[in-house]
Amino acid sequence: MEYAELVKIITRLKQCQTPSELQECFSQAISVLGFQQFAYMRFARNNVDIEHSIYTFSEAWKIRYFQEGYDQVDPVFIKAFEAGETFFWSACMSEFTKGVEHFFEEAAVYGIYAGLTTPLKSSSKAKAIMTIVAAKTEENKDLKEPDPSIAAMIRILSECFHQVAIQILAPDDLVLKPRQKQVLTLASYGMSSKEIAAALQKSEAYINELITGILHKLGTQSRPAAVRRALELGLLG
Image (cartoon, rainbow, N blue to C red; front, side):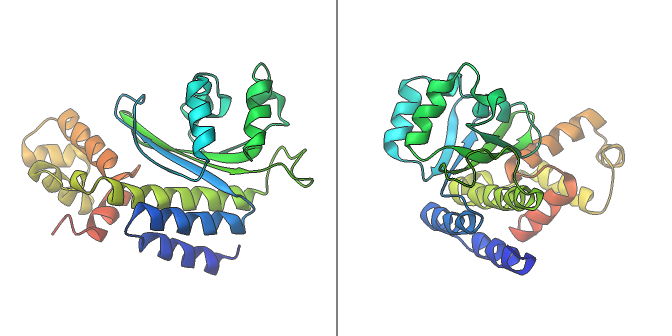
């Protein structure tokens, strides 16, 4: 995938207005990179309950997955809560399959053999996960590491999907409280937490807590990204 095509896909993703539109657009994007299915899950702040999900996995596999308690032993799922970056996994990699061979054998029946998983951590209190998968083929049956450029593109697309999904699935969450708006506005001027605290006569710890909440709400991981996202959504006026 060339850079120009990546930009076009990101533009289309940002134009999606419904979960079905987002699902279709993202499916088309990953197919270009050789993947057939994906599952996006956004968790509640307890990191246990699934708050929102968009996926193309079959309902039969979803039912089987939770009925058999695979979410408790799935090494990909477990690593996603520990990792900070996109990682590759495959049924041919012993570090993932050891002790859960049956799980991977059954997953393969549903077209799930290898993939890239991206942790999308918004804050220390909540996160989301994007997993993109491919069925077993002659080309990937022994693959243990994909081309770095593919992993990078998947990361970019997953982050974009995450931001759009937050806007589509939880529009009511995207209203900044007066104090959050005030703090983010000051941050947009390049002020540090210490400077904002002094300006508002609050503690630095209180300001940092507010900023953490803003990052979670907007699905971003840095202040500059939060500012850009808030401006895109018209939340700063």
